[in-house]
Length: 115
Length: 109
Image (cartoon, rainbow over all chains, first blue to last red; front, top):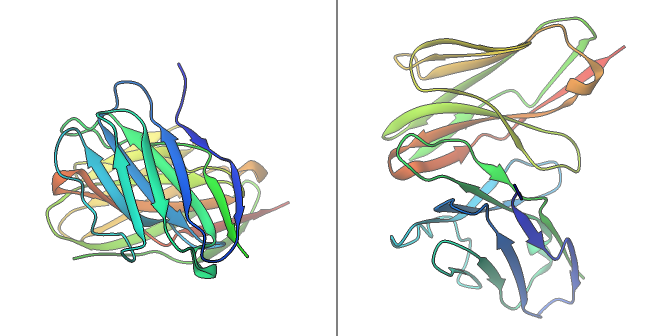
């Protein structure tokens, strides 16, 4: 079946503009995660959605970052008033979300460049 | 809070064995996973340890000791294609996953 997809694959934007990144998880996966990965660095947790529970937003770096998820499907990550330090690859992952489900399936990522 | 430590880089030759250690401090710890990421690619799942002991999957094995808050990934019969970054990941209550900083493995001929 289809894996996790993300769009756009690349985004170049000017400092101060807003951007919206999209993630389509694997059908039936109730858990969805967003991560940020700067060049040569590890994955930085941003936000986690699990079913209808309140999302875990503890990783969002500032109030310029927000994310939404429609039911158990598409999620969008929005960055307002982008800054150069926001340049990174933004990765989305989904998992079954059931107790004991630990394997995450990652999308190809969106490479964001803020000029 | 959550914190993980793993070496930043390891270099080895083809055919060798490499062990990547991971120590963690995780509240509500459930288990430890390992992911592989090639340059420019997305992370892919390698293994999971929910109980103490060794899990073997082909050339790769992973170990966990809960009492020591320690685990490792063992790569055997190294191949050039194993050159990648390897991340240890803790799973905690609420399915919260935390990634370590990654270990870059460079395999030389």
